[in-house]
Length: 49
Image (cartoon, rainbow, N blue to C red; front, side, top):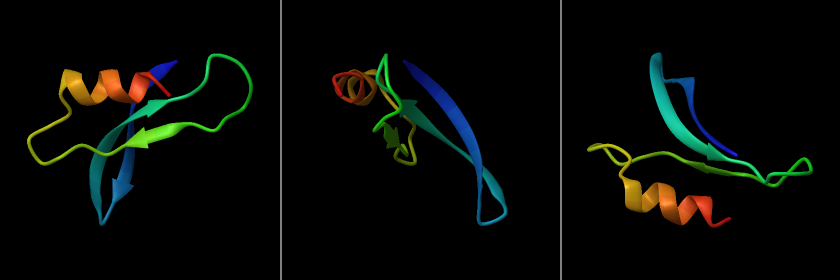
């Protein structure tokens, strides 16, 4: 399961890509994108875990 999440960081709103296993409680992978954004290649790599 994957989703875009938002959180506070240094007084600003930031976002990341959170991937969790389909069953169980974890572990998960949280990817914080580069300044130019999160591209499909990074999402695909994260989805493998």
